[in-house]
Length: 365
Ligand SMILES: O=C(O)C(=O)C[C@]1(C(=O)O)C=C[C@@H](O)C=C1
Image 1 (cartoon, rainbow, N blue to C red):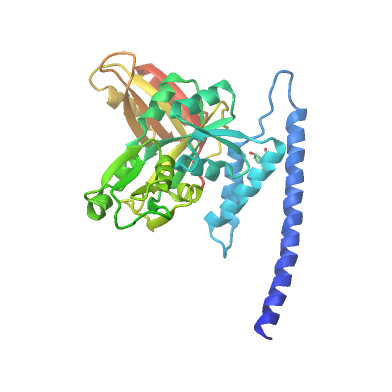
Image 2: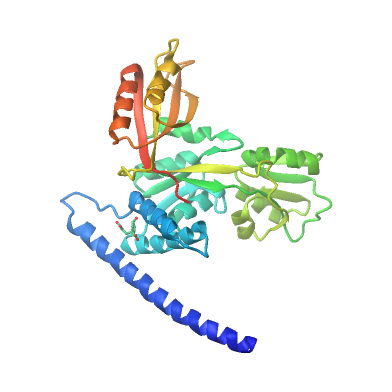
């Protein structure tokens, strides 16, 4: 058979498969509409329906990854199903999500990675505004950065938890690739200024020292803002990611310039909805201990004694007294698990205050 004939035959097969896939996706979407009707039917007076079910979404994605036999990799397949579910959920009820903007930031990329493209996403100018939008009910969920593997905690986010009553409903991890971006009119051999967010400049410090030691580094409010500025200046470049590059039509002069190849940021999904256990969960809590010797030891012991994996501990000023602190802790397990309940009770007996911020499925993608 000639090449043309082989391609023709294969394309006929692909067309047939696409038609079957379309039929199946449509059937799935009709099922989701039915699910929405069932959720509405069982509501008691005054109750609002809960369309978004993170615990179910985590299960669906994990299940698909478990049974996937290739040739597409697990991440690729999960991304496709992520989008199918996102569209199905939008049929039930479109989700409104606020994120730390402006458009083109890594936080927007994290929001889309977690919820898929079918959400209505709104950029906010500051982390605190994302919290306020969620508390007021103007949006269903918010997405904020909480830690970077190179630069550590995002303190604005931690502090916002001290001021707002909010539930953590999920987490998403994003591999952060930074690029040196230039515009069409940039004189690439005469760059005198590089814009970026302070965290991104810090993540590329060694690379900048080696390649642009004498160029002015200007910290701006976001990577997207850095990219926007480069559009109008012939002698500047920006450090930002792919979304900002696309948004402002910039090209990559150098790719993946972050000092650490595993540079990642963890984001939290904040909302007003408790998430049931999935069997593979994480819990976040704020604990304030008495100011006495051994206080930290008392906090850590119950985790050690019960072999619970404490994945993170962060200290912040309590804001209610000079030289007093609160601990932000993350650990594996759900606050409804009997073992975790016991541990929280023990800690509660020793602590001045203990607040569970939420239990949520561990990031799947
Ligand atoms: O199972 C549900 O509760 C659904 O609403 C269906 C579905 C899906 O498409 O699979 C959609 C949205 C939810 O967040 C979880 C799952």
